Image (cartoon, rainbow, N blue to C red; front, side, top):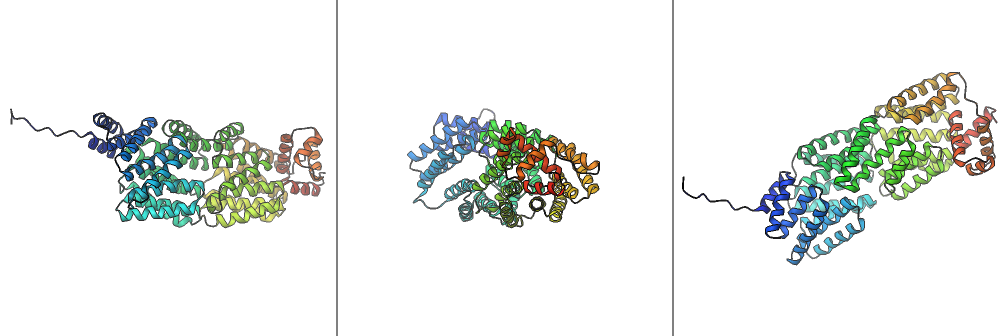
Length: 551
């Protein structure tokens, strides 16, 4: 009624702040918690402020608020709440600053605080955070056990997010361990629940979905990865969660690279690298290494090398550098990078080892180290047969062809490359398919089937030109020229000199010294010799040259 005072509802900025977080209004949450801290610096207000800053990627404000909340909880005799802050400080130290040692200290502190306390959700969340670090450090069995314990605690205390993220941890560990079907099924189940709004915490949705996409990438299940990337992108855009969106899109760009959509992939990677540098600087390397791989495929080798150097230590940078060496005819360095990668990828987690084994087998075959190539192929076969995707089958077939070629077994090499072409076609991988066609063309040329060889080489050249693979297209052109005249390309005088020294047992370095040229030039000559003679190794090239009476 007019003239009667209406009671005013008391303002509780902490409650309002948590409500704003729940509806993903990060700016409003920041204002509410800032007001709350100004009125009274409680641990709850500081914790809320830390989350608002976390979502806004204000790292300085986030770390300050989290540490103050931790100290306040500790001084108030609340060890469980303090452990929660310590747990997040551990993960944030990695995500925002790349400080692994600091992260280990905070996670150890959280575990110490929870010792002696009754088990609760905070212990489960600590398990999840610890498991993530163990997964990427290669200690997969321990990570899987912690994921299972976290999931059990989630069920016990009715915490769906904890239960699901623990299950997702187990799923990714299963993928790493080679139980791919079970792992991907579990990850898909969790991601479906996450995007169906069955979770309470927004951040746990992104975490689970990122695990799924990463698992798909590990198994080269690019179709599945693309579908889930689109789903997570739509969810991220709806909630305005930009760093999940950009991290997802960096992985999606890897799918675009595989499919030959390089212009779009380049745009995605450049934008993602720039945005992640602002939001989560350590995460920017995920876009960076994929950009390096794109540059390698484009034949922009100097740029690729510079990018891989900048991302040194990242597993994809190690692999990319190895592939780059092989592209440039330096099989020795390629083998070293493959071995470096495999030292990091333990046998406990066979799935991630597949890419390193492929590189090692091809490099060793090129060097004529057939025993090493065969051993790598044997392990790769065991691993790849547990990865039920066409890209994995295609890569295995290509390596089989490469090793058979190095042995001089042309029919077996032909079959391997033909199988690789078929699987790469199914997987919609034009670059890899074209490279397999070039390898097949060399085998067919050596078998005297010039017309068939020319057909495959021309098909490869057309595909490589279309997607912008300049160096590989030039390689195709160098193969087409002699084939189109109906014969094989004779070696130049210098190439015959190099091959004679190789036949005499000289190393590349010794040959370079004998001819007073650089070792790099010798590597280039050997690459040209292998291409012209249609062989996969130095020893096979010598044998083929002798057969053709070129020496």
